[in-house]
Length: 332
Ligand code: UDP
Image (tube, rainbow, N blue to C red; front, side, top):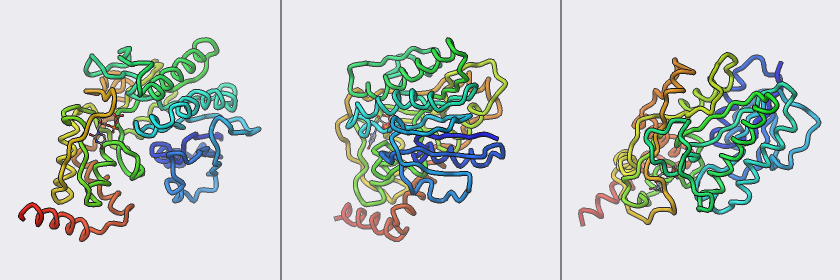
């Protein structure tokens, strides 16, 4: 029976991963360590499993005498406005967090880390295979995130090389879905929250920059398959994403349509906003041939909008009203 620790387990991805972990019968104890910086207690409030416990702490400061068979490191903000506001804290969570987690890992245990497609920076190659070295600026405004993900990957692969550490690293691409904070600041969640509250949808730049939007259930399914795999000759890291690339403007227009015609406004681009992002899934298809991103962005965005509507306690009638108010205004 295994003892498992999930750092960042009250976050968007972390909480979905906990749900999957608790389906496993070989786990006797699941501890979530989360400082609730970007995570939310509500994300794990539904868990009633006696094996589960929650500790509110920075991962760097977490103290325990226990050792764990598996550790999952998801303790990091992932939204640009959040990590750009607190870059030092972001670097610390990723890197010092990883050092701390190495200390609590049992000898022979497995270390799983969620890196990011941001390690490719603003890519000059499309789609991006894991072997692409990326185009990242270590003095740029996104560096706290990009470079701490890169450095944590380096730390773990070097531990693998020199000490045989069992390491599993994934690089997710633009994940969206239920349990994103309404004030998260990333595209899909912003668009949903804006459209539902009668505010205009903000598209940064001309909106022609593109991303590969992955619905959370598909992405977590990919994580689980890779993280729990024992027999593979692929050492990672592994891209996990949807390889259908869609412009930001198209997503904004789709959300607008779903929400009764919310207006779209154009605002200046954030600094160093990557122009494109698409995973090369050759390795993912090789390692887990039965996996794919089955949920289209049309379906996933609609589900996400519905979740936000419930979460923010907005009735369909209110959304319709906001829509007709806008139509009324447009007619005047
Ligand atoms: N974006 C936007 N409006 C928003 C939030 C984001 O147009 O309200 C754009 C952002 O400039 C980027 C893309 O959507 O080009 C994806 O941004 P996000 O923050 O979701 O993820 P990123 O890939 O930048 O980490």
